[in-house]
Amino acid sequence: MKDQEEHFGRLNAFLRKKWKNLTLQQKLTALFLLTAVIVLAVNLYMFTLINEMTGRVEEVYVSNVTLNELSGALDRVQDSMEEYLNTKSSDAMEDYYRSEQAYRERLDRLNTQATDNQMLLTEKNIRGLSESYLELAAEAIQAKRGRNVEKYGKLYEDLSILYEEIHTFIYSLNNAQFKDNSRNYQVLLSSLRYMEFISIAVLLLVLLGNISLIVVSTRSVTRPLHRLARAAGEVSGGNFDIGQIPVQSMDEVGIVTNTFNEMVENIRNYIEQLRETMERENQLKERELMMQSHLKDAQLKYLQAQINPHFLFNTLNAGAQLAMMEEADRTGRFLENVAEFFRYNVRKNDEDATLKEEIHLVDNYVYILNVRFSGEILFSKEVDRSLLDMRVPSMILQPLVENSFNYGIRNISWRGRIELSVYRREEEICISIWDNGAGMEPERIEQVLCGHAGEAEPSSGSNGVGLKNVMERLKLYFRGQARLQIFSEGEGTGTEVLITILGNSEP
Image (cartoon, rainbow, N blue to C red; front, side, top):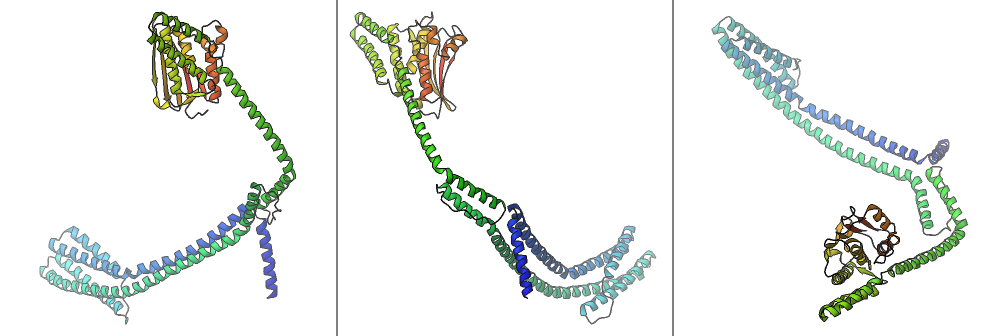
């Protein structure tokens, strides 16, 4: 007994060592195969038992089926014989011989031995009567063929009596077997139900056993993972003062645990140096961001300060001339628009604005131009009202309208027209300023978009940098998510300046 215990102990230690040296894939595969084999074996065993019980249930009523087939074969013999006696046709003769052969084949299955069993004795009586019946039927057929009417008539009466007696015996035997089979069926059905209960119980026991086996076997796999997860959680929370995690196996988990221990040790050795380095980098980044912010503020203020001052003098001169030529009401309205225009410039010098405010400024500017040039400008606008509260850099629309007037329609021989459109296009917000003026060549468009427009026409009545001003402020304000495009088909075809802003862009 002691030797057996020692042998079992050595075997257990050997298996534990082998299990620890297996990889995770090998462990999981072994567990899966073991549980699958157990479940499969139990299912096959239960399936075999249930099939055997089902076969026995099916065999219960085979005897009743056999007797029903025997009765049907007897009916076919009687019917084919009667048809031949009545018609003497060859078809009826063939049907008779086929029916007789089939009936004899079924008779061979009945008992011929002497016995005390009442049902077997009935089978023997049925077979004896059937033999007599078939002999008389053959004689009646021969008498019919020989045209002996009196003989086959007498034989037919005897055959009818035997036919009824055989049916009576078959019916009696069928009832007796049915009663006996019903008792057997109830016994088998009870056994089958009991077997189903046993099967369910066995499957539940196997399932519980497999679950217990999986829980116990996988604990050696999951326990190191839980320890590693807890340690990783401590490290992720900033606690590097944790002890070494013990390594209990040489599988993937053990390798990861060793690597994790080394990683924590390395981090602990360099954590102070890394913290100091990060602090210095953060300070440098903060100073860099502050410098970038100041630089952008200076760029915005510088660009906004480039608004053309010549327009102020030209407008005031026009107002003075109008005051002398016309009555004071129109002059007052003109000067009011002028005052409002420049008041907006001063107030919005370092602010952004809504599209509604920018469009109102354009209305004032066009009114002033029409006063100066005797209503020569036809101005129209189409604005999506849901976009009026959108914020944009101040003074971006008026310089574009001013360029459309100065470079587009000011010196043309036909009636000038400027159209302002604000609309959505898929995920973009579009602002279009179109004129029907002089148009632009592709080379000129490229110059303007590259920022060389001021150098090309330094003596222009405008500031010469209005478009560049707008492009740079849009780029800064929307952080590169806005673009300005110019479209023209050439000289005399008009020009469109299109600002496109991504719909989700924020300043």
